[in-house]
Length: 261
Image (cartoon, rainbow, N blue to C red; front, top):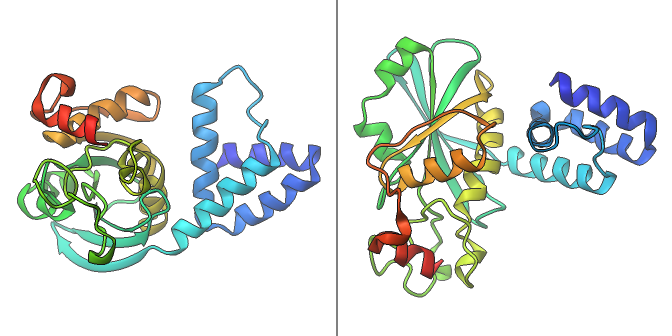
């Protein structure tokens, strides 16, 4: 927040058009999109002037964040080991569909968080209901974030072959951004996890310190955790995986997904 305020202050003095974006930014919830943008700017270009964001770019980021975050809806709340499991939904701009995610909020303020990416055929609820991780997370004061494993298109928009097999399509997004049409319209799980999901958590659960986050996963989710963590080493405090698909181009699961998406 300090960095975003400082950068906004510099921008206001140098460009009156950006001043409008800064005002809009203050009205957006928690300045979330701007915070993430500035964080990534500092990591990738530490020697550049960190305030050098164009007016068009700043306006785009602010508007995108406000639209996505204002649509977050709480679906359910369940008390658990002194904390709460909360389930949310919002309209994703990266997948073009409603996306569901769950967050365990421990009984502490500003808890660091661990993103857990599930494997093939799972939803966010598999980890919530079967892992038993909330007990230990509550003891350690760590929040848990569990997204879905793919977009869930309504029946009238289903893609050809989307539900034909367990290892491709629904429940098998592989945490990549598809480049082949028509999958590229919806299957952009890498962007969802790295961009929209942190923003949504920041707004839905202010008790969670999204800037202090780690990532892990199982099987397909382990592949997602490793690739995301290795591409963004400065964003994640730790990266780990359980039985990951760690050499996807050499195994049938990865070959099918990479060629298809």
